[in-house]
Structures are given as structure tokens and as C-alpha cells.
Image (cartoon, rainbow, N blue to C red; front, side):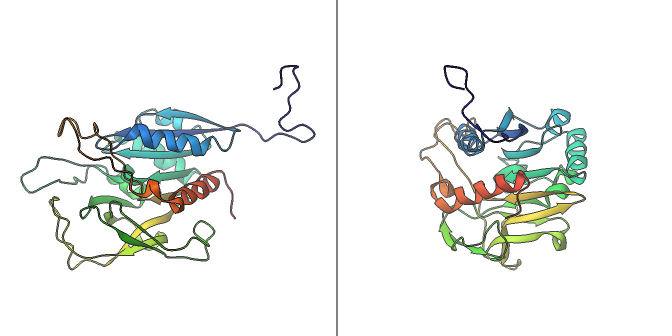
Length: 265
């Protein structure tokens, strides 16, 4: 609104209706502050979208009153009630953009390496996957699995130095692959480290239809700053930004938000 009270934006046309949405950003071992700020910046490109931010999923009833949900979490383990509430919301038509460690539960400091306990089966079923392990961060190729789908169309294959998520899939045949990579080997440091005989194809981004709604999952986007491994390490020596340095990743996120808003092209 200008100083003289004239509402310039949308003058001469009907302004878009307000849309209320929710961002859950929280958890461990990642630079949540960085990811939260970047995602809020992308959401702010749609000024009619008003965003409420939560550190976890326990305000599930309020979260499910929004038009859509975006999540960037790691080792955030929702209560059984929150899992069921959000699953019901998706089945009823909700759209959820789930990023990176949303599907991860981690137990560090175990004798055989980092364990990924199966503590939230409803959550994993809703998301379509659960994180199990990743090999050491190193460059790997991101392939376009469905070049005709608008969420990835015209995005060139690219290399990224991100965590390559090795996952246990739920309802695998129902998942619609959009991005993928191929890898077999040793995910050292994790209790379930031997992936030498696994299916070499690993999904990076996929759609998980569920009832009248869907989840759009993208495993990319690891980030970590100096102080994000506490109490395991008081000071982490490097800053990791991984796919956040790639213009392709930001384009994928922008399209994901458009998808959450109900766009189809």
C-alpha cells in the first residue's frame, strides 16, 4: 500500500486470495537456520502465501489447516498421533513437499555405526521411504527419470556433491520417479553399510500419490555449518552447502512450491 492509501498491487484486477501454508524446519546435524531461510525466501516469491514455521510436527492439527506443507527436518520423530493426522490430511487431498532428512531417524554412537531405527512406520509409509544410509559425500550424477514431467522437464542432468540417500521404500510400485542416480558400494560409517548387491537405482526425487493427495519428496539439500554437530562435535571443521550451490536445485524447489500451490505445468 502506498503512503496515500492506494493499494497499488493488483490495481485493476482481482488480487490472488491469501493462502496459508506451513514450513516445518528443525532437527539435528544440519544447518537448519540456513535451510529455513532459503526456503522462506523461495516461498516469499509468492507474496499471497503466508507461512507459519514450526520446529516439529506436533502441532499437526494446525499444520493440516494449511493449504500445503514444506518440511526440512532430520531425526525429528513425530508422535503416533501426529503421524496419523498428517497421513490423513495427505489422503484427504493435502500436498506435502518433503525435503532431505524428513524421512530420517538416526541413532549415532552405536558400536556398528549410525543406525536408522524403524521407529515411524506410518511416517515412512506416508512419505514412501525411510532413509537408511549414505556413502561419504562425493560428486554423483543426477539423472532425469521422467523427462516429460513438468516438475523436471528441460532440467539438464547434473552432478552434485550431496548425500546420496540409500532408502527403504514403502509401496515402491506406487512411487513416480522424477530424479534418480545409480550406485552400489559401501556406506561406511552406517550400521547397514553393504549396498554392493543392492538395486543400483536410487530415487532422488519422486511423487508419492496417497488417496486424494500426494507427497513430493526430494532427498537433495544437505547443509551443515560449524556448530551443527553438537554435542557430537563442538565445532565441525567445514561448511557444507552441497546442492544448495546448484541452480538446478533451486529450480526444482521453485517448481515444487508451484506444485504445492496446485499448478500442473
